[in-house]
Image (cartoon, rainbow, N blue to C red; front, side, top):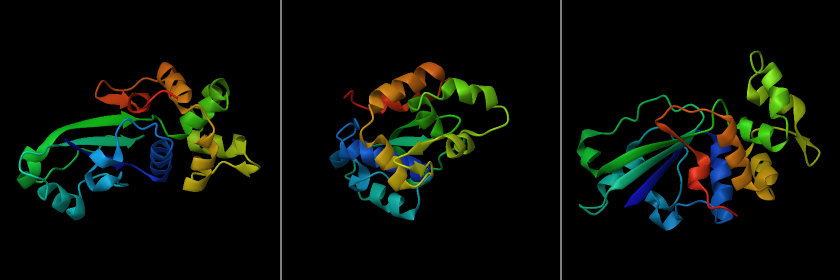
Length: 176
């Protein structure tokens, strides 16, 4: 079984790369298609070709990670039999909720959530290492480097509600 890990954006890419670097991601890179996660929402021609090159009996489990997972995965007909399943791992309403929770600002955010998106709230309220929040990969990796990621993801799961078809990131993380 190979895993195709599809990431929605920069923040997810930085976060999953950090998990991999720290040895916390439950999926080993050796088991990933192309030995890495991919910052893509769909199977593009390159991924399509990689799946086609797999041995005939090898299957692919698709793992989608993001905060908006509403788009349906389009699987080309000639590789449909190669796809074992698709799983979605979500950080609704936005990835920044993890940082808001980590900073102990969840209750403060709840008071303004009807008029302020998590990304805006984070930019206005969170400073780390004398730098205001931004969604750059460097900021994300620096911020989470020394954090107890498992604990943050567990707290997120206790405070959020997902659709039944969406899993929580904590399910992909080894406890520290």
